Figure 1 (cartoon, rainbow, N blue to C red):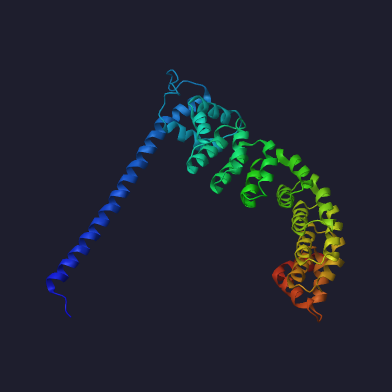
Figure 2 (tube, rainbow, N blue to C red):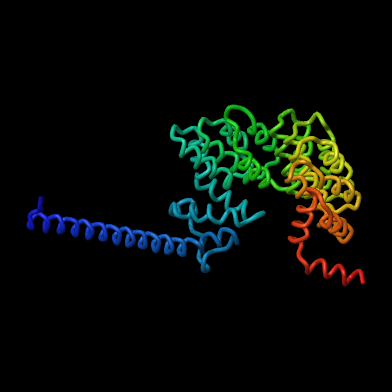
Length: 359
């Protein structure tokens, strides 16, 4: 069956017209977006002198300071963009400005809004703009029915900077509305080193997920005061294995020589390959000679990942550890391939430098 020529021409014309319309729509969208961007840039240039004047507490160009309460709403967006970049009195000055303009009060009202996006936006704004003045209200939203709102509340509590929020954030690791550990971890890190004493105390929490997260965070902070507590967790055979692994990894990051003994104990006595591997990696980071013989023994482990971790750790111990690896690599058995792989990854340049140094 052939299509009439007239029908084909009409169909082609229709397709062409549709393409032209789509191109016009795209061009119009880009034009409008460009105009909006230009307008926003212009408004920002107009309002930035006012922001600077508020921070400096000086008039603008010698004139009396304009009424900041009656300034356009664009001022709020500019201030909110600047807040994360500021610290100390300048940050507080801009927070006071937002409060004076009613931004904070409107956000507090929106915390109970029906729409979840409004609740999430409100709690995020309070975390940046209100400091520690509305911690209780933000904590309440950690139990919100919307996961997005709960995550926004956790991030806001981190930005607010009040260490008193640590307990509430850690409780959010458990229960039907538990939050992802990554979200909570970043929020707790945002609280900074002022939260370290509370985090150390939280290692005694009954919440297994909280103990594991706290152990990781103490390691990220490299907190030497936490090392004895983490060492106790690694030694405790009745402790959850996930918590012990997190504690072992944290000890490797902290790097205290006293941590070598409990890590060696875990490597040599645990039946969990994950804990053995993590302990070996931590021993490699610490670099204590006490670990040499236990790591050599670990090269005979059944788990290939444990053998590889022990080989890598020996390679990190310096000339003596690498000499032991070379002896194993030259021999038979399952340990030889992982020893050779660790030495190959180390590279000949390092071995040559050690030989020159020894000579």
